[in-house]
Amino acid sequence: EVQLVQSGAEVKKPGESLRISCKGSGYSFNNYWIGWVRQMPGKGLEWMGIMYPGDSDTRYSPSFQGQVTISADKSISTAYLQWSSLKASDTAMYYCARPVAVAGNIDYWGQGTLVTVSS
Amino acid sequence: QSALTQPASVSGSPGQSITISCTGTSSDVGGYNYVSWYQQHPGKAPKLMIYDVSNRPSGVSSRFSGSKSGNTASLTISGLQAEDEADYYCSSYTSSSTLPYVFGTGTKVTVL
Image (cartoon, rainbow over all chains, first blue to last red; front, side, top):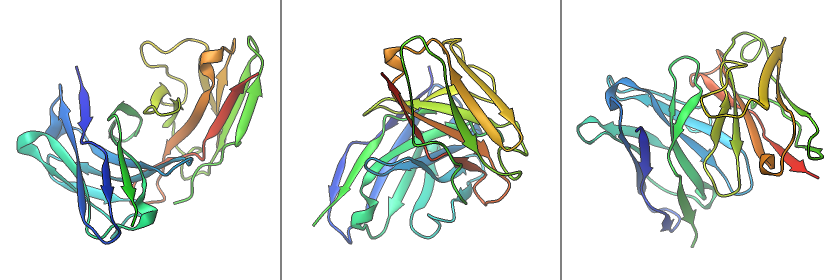
């Protein structure tokens, strides 16, 4: 059974750094794109970026380029989303997702990680 | 990378049919048969309902159907049920960005 299991909720202060994780199981992690989707409170879904763990090819939405870093550790089948300096506007639910190559439809989602940034 | 345009809300009575539109451009919806639809209940992760314009994943009710005409895709829910009340998002492949996927703005479906 394919599963994407994300790390738990985080509460941080503005300016702090953060890395959240998404562990894939039940499939060949290296051979599927994995990505991150943001959902701000009461708002819609936004693609942030995707990565192909097999060769580390990474694509970012222009809105998130330079704001976050997507990475992966193939040895433990885990993808990461990282911020170096959080802002209050980063408060959101973050989902990891496995998009089907080319078509992009997401057949598997993580359960979501709620990030709250507040002073 | 602009979001695809959906109506903010659609409503219907139990048993009725409703249709949600998703309008893009020739660089996304109109140019490729890679439109998908997601259902999201409050506090839950989205669920894939339709992929490649009109295909249903295993386990999704046949009351859900998808279609496309030009730059607009549509999701139709027939025989509306209380459990269909949720947010719905379309998504498409796009050639106009470094990230080749874009979501719609989302539609709140209310069952009256």
